[in-house]
Image 1 (cartoon, rainbow, N blue to C red):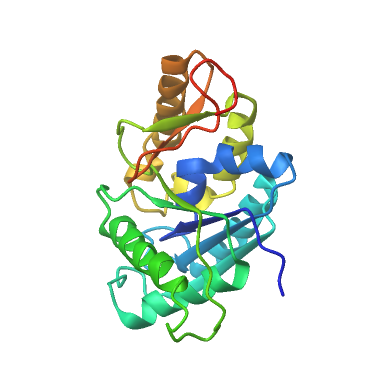
Image 2: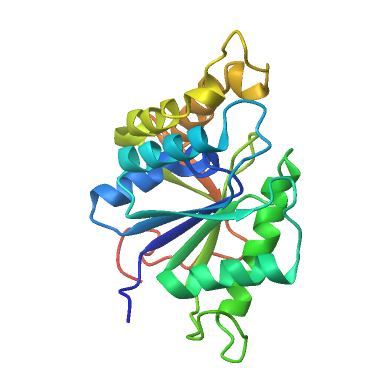
Length: 236
């Protein structure tokens, strides 16, 4: 049996996970936690860059963050819909790596692929734990928790993680995606090439300021969070 991993982070495209929670991934990787990123598409409809270049950039970004593996499902870019085949592929990934925690994009985002990615992942997390759900990997797996990271926009987080010591690592991972964040003379002007990384850094600085640290990444939970320490710092 494969040794279960700690964190499985899903994104519609390579760079989604880095944008939303790259510093958190770097933080937990530095603690020896086993982390896998799964990109649902190969970003073949990106305005800038090629599939092959995006693949190389994603590999380099993963090395910067210290992840164990990166999986690409190659579902159609701009074709992420709540369909049986898409759900089954994500179920297979969950059952293969057996994560304790799953992260996926926040369900309110300007890009439909990000929203649909989360719809697919939500269905797959539920189905992965059903014994009689048929997939290419038969062993069911129940995920402990699902958390949602932000890609676009400034949403109110349910909780934040202090990432002050890992913000530069996050920016380093994003810098691997030069096809997306660096404007070239022969490239297409997109939101990503117009101060996007500065906006992300400002968001994380804002979240950090709200809790008294330099930088923090914000997350959303669909259910209440159970504290493992009481409000005065003791064990529950």
